[in-house]
Image (cartoon, rainbow, N blue to C red; front, side, top):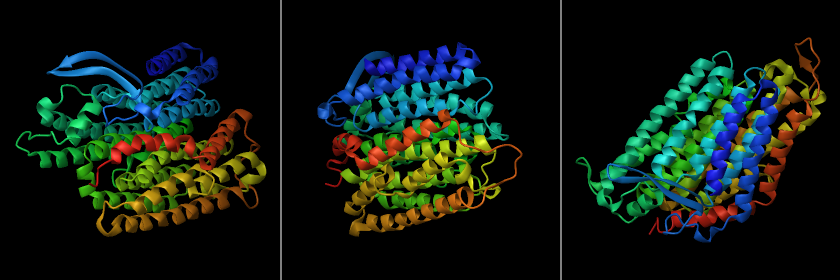
Length: 511
């Protein structure tokens, strides 16, 4: 019952934070957020992958099934559990939420209790997304995440916060509706083969070829339509080109701690769902359309990197680079190899840590200088040496420097993609080779931005002192950097448990 305890405690913690006085809300929220961190680390320490077989009739770890409702002959249950794919994301969510809360102590100076309460409310729903194994339960958590994010951007954001919040909500909510229709068509097409919304049961029925016709569509057409609807819905959340346009606006207008959660965890909802639904339930369609999916991934990598190269706002640079990094995740998924899919899952965690570090570093600089524009400042290394050092280390992680989490993730993805035979004639290797040029572009825009802002003579048009950041702003950066290096030096911390869960997903796909 530890999953239930974690989710329930985080909801209660959010309510407690809502009623705390503003002067206590930040510290109180951080103290409360440490309990989910400890809980997720306990789950990690006790995790047993032996029954970790979502597609083999096994039992996921810490699993609970409690019947809830009967709707139109289908049973809806409180059904939660974790496997090697979801547990790393649960740990990422709890750790990043705690650090984001600390990073908000300086910039959030009004309505603190509501802000920190919404952060914890969002964490509770994110834990639900990564642990729910019943579709309806999962969908409730999936949609509930939108609510705190909408208010966090719309109330505490920048000058165009209302526009950015509405755009974020409309894009992601419309995408969810299309995804919902696609998934329900699959469930109804299964007919008597399933009597519940349990994801393992539905996945196994689809893999067993029990899908029938529905609404005049034969099984193969229904599979294709449902795959396209779900892929579109999740692709908006990832996001991939061309449905990425909500992301830069949301990032630029959101306060820094919210950007940390948006890039670090919320984008992973899309890639996690793609793996759980599209690539697990309908592998034949994914393989048939692998060239198209790989092309979308490569375009996202290159186009996102080119857009980042053209930006002057440090936050926009990191935001567009996220579009590029998520393209690598799609490339790993479509490879359908242990290294490819495992590397994609590892990249979700690595990117969550690295993007969190980059956004926090930009936020620390902004808190001190009140600008994020590359052309407005130079020589920050002399005034903020610790922040500068951590920012440079994070940028090297983004570039895929060895012994850092980003390198390990990209190595696994590229190795898996080069081994893949989903496209005839090793075609995926050609797509991968093209995507690898994205690394060169990433290095270009990050080195350009750092050289302009961090080095050279100090220049900033301001009448106040610019100096080192407070300790509570620097500590979260240090913790993230330690995590990034730890995963780079010892990727087996997560990778072994990930591959145990990935093996059933890729099993038999190409036979």
